Every structure is written in C-alpha cells, then in structure tokens.
Image 1 (cartoon, rainbow, N blue to C red):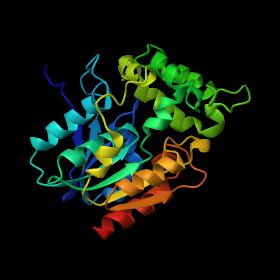
Image 2 (cartoon, rainbow, N blue to C red):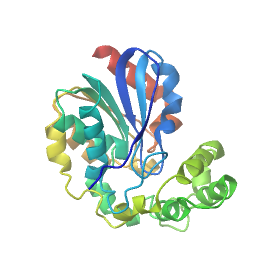
Image 3 (tube, rainbow, N blue to C red):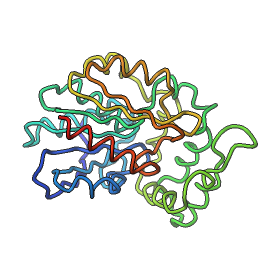
Length: 273
C-alpha cells in the first residue's frame, strides 16, 4: 500500500534540526508560538496524514500509521541526527520513532502524551463531547466563525454543570482550532473514538526502548490533561533518561496555554544536551 504524501515545512535555520509533531485535529503550524524561541534551529513543521496539507489515508489512522510516516521520512532524509518534539498524538509518534531509530534521534520532548488508560475511559473524560464534535466539524463547509462558536459551546465533561470550552480557552485559540479542523479528514477520529488508536502500539515497551534524553511535560487530568499523575510517574520510570516537569493547574495544550513555562523547560532541556 502506497505511503501518503507528507507535507513538511522546513525552516531556514542552521542549528541542530528539530522535528515538531502536532496533536490530532491540528497541523504543523500549531507550533508557531514556539518558533521565535527556536530561530537558531532548523525546524521542521510536520502535518500528519489526514491533516493540513498531507494526504488522506482513510482507514489507516492508528498511532503506528502516523509513526510509520515519520520513521520513513527520517530514514530518507539528509538529517544525520535530529531532535523530536511531540504534543499529544505527536508525543506518541515521537516515542515510537525514538524507540525504532535510536541512532537518528538525539532527544525527545513529550508534551502531555495521552496514556492508554486515559483514552480507554474517554467517554467519562472531559473530552467525551469534544472529540465527537471535532469529527463532525472536520472538513466542514461551515465558515471558521460557525465552527468556532460550536467548539466554544461544547461541554467539557459529562456532567450537566461541566464548563463550556469557551469558559476555559480564549476565542482566538479556539478559532485556530476551528481553522485546523477544516483541513482534517473526519475519519482521523474514527479509531480514536472506537478505542482502536493504540492497535499495534505497546506504550510501556515503547517507552522502555527509548535510550536518548527525554523531557516529559504534563498537565493535570482535572484541568484537561491526558496523562494521569500515576501514568506520568510510570512513564518517567520507564524512560531511562527522563526529566519530568508537571504543570500544576494546566490542561493539555501546554505550548499555547502555558507558553512561558513550556519555553523555559524546553530551552533548559536543549541547553543541557
């Protein structure tokens, strides 16, 4: 089966290359808040299959499918060695890539990777209504303003008193999410909602196989994070060279909602390499 054509936006910096891998429903431009701090690096903004300007691959949207694209691209690239930064889905992809290409990956930053235990209980999580709505709005003909209003109004949790997304996030960041969704294949969400996202992916064995220095950033589940504290501790133990930084009172999208703290942790980690 042919590999989808991937879109990668490579910057003009001359420093050590850095590949940035976004979360589900977004695209490589999600990392623009970090770019001013990475001006000396040769950054590569990746669009996963089914996202942004990369090809669709209907029926092939489990985590190992996304990882196979990155692994293939690195193996055929001119980069002798590079750093990986992954958020959410991108963090899971970065883990598998580092485990399978130890000679090509110098370091990994994992921003709030969702744990299998968290996603197994998605129906009772803060995202129980958000992900189905995101699938409904993906590739929609509706304008950005309409999608923004729908996303802002969704309840973040199963309870009748759960806050709306618009109560937790500013409208500009929700508008960006809405624009990203217009270029997402709705089928991207099918295996996630069906509990099949981790098919063929052993979370703990993958983490244990990573030999490079790894920075793990995670929020709190009560605030929207996807890596419960117990799972974060276990992941930190499995990663042989880990540095773990919890973000108290933070949710899932750390590099947008807690930019200053994310940048400080990221730069300190890179300066230590």
